[in-house]
Image 1 (spheres, protein in one colour):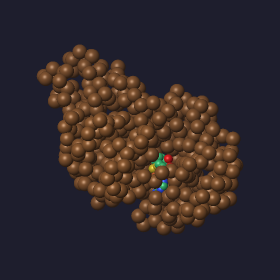
Image 2 (cartoon, helix red, strand yellow):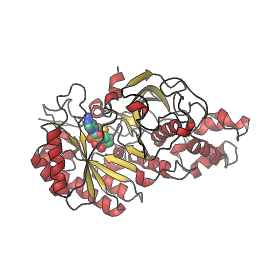
Image 3 (cartoon, protein in one colour):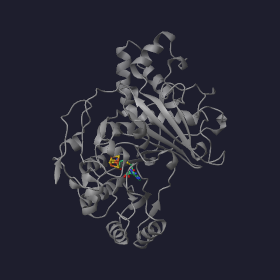
Length: 442
Ligand code: SAH
Ligand code: SF4
């Protein structure tokens, strides 16, 4: 039995042309699917988030400032506040004339996200935030501080329309695309916390274990942080010394949403994240990873952007029969086509592609599937990142047995394929994407 997927009519925010032109997707209703499968490439129309300077190039920011009757260099000053000092509070901008501050901040630095809920674990080095956007849409971001780097995991959409049955986000469906600035704001929020020394340096302090605080950020996130040097209450409160400060070094698009289904905003966000201050945040392109379910035309388009970001492909099965079910979009673009697009991407960028594979007990963890995966990837510019499944509430699926996981790793390594097992940070705070948002939905 099959069900025609709904492809909504384009309304703002517009669906991405890279995927909206695809033929209708036919998705089988399988008893193993936790929800009736439905693919949605465009979100319900909700209106656009307010314009923010992180949506704009510097030339566009200057034009907005000029329209307000201000000298265009004010665009650079505002950009330095946001991307260099991680603030968008008008009263922190002492280099701007008092009379202009509020007007400029209102026009280019509206508050986009408000922290709804904070969770932390790993002695405070892993912090997950549930954000509420201007229209009530909920998204999640996660900050993970390691001894040698800080990774921010960001959402690219509120929800996701791709319907992968093992994923909490997929089960909730797509609400809407995020704007570039809403994506960037998640990273800037983390940058601000780190700059203020409010994230412990490593897992050495305190004990393990989750902690939780509702509305713990008193001033609410981007645009609402406590100025550097001051402290705040709640679990993000500033008891740590500022010599503990750090920077965001890596960004992974592995939170809620399918980044390549929101192509224009994601590419704009990547540019803002990687352009030097004051145009952007100055993170290295090589330290940004875009993870996709396998939207082939959009992978090809990304390969032509001249960016050297890492591509991660969520494969989860080496055979179409199983992948059709685990990753419903496989019914449109098959394993061979997805991998061909990945190798083209590697050739165009010189970047090793990361093949993501969630190990699900007795579903995709058989030895023969490890061998099949090994033969597909051997000799390619690729490595495999195995993710022990983080079970979603109500699902009968769970992670593979340790011995089975070890054997899967061994077989890939024997085929000459580099393989790592993803660190499972954040498990105790609903680490799998979408689980936190799902838990607060009415
Ligand atoms: N939509 C994109 C990026 C967001 S999901 C994608 O699918 O690639 C980020 C990663 O988390 C993907 O590899 C996805 O398959 C994986 N994931 C989703 N739910 C999971 C779960 N319950 N356990 C383990 N990995 C999961
Ligand atoms: Fe969407 Fe990725 Fe979840 Fe699939 S795994 S439903 S593509 S967020």
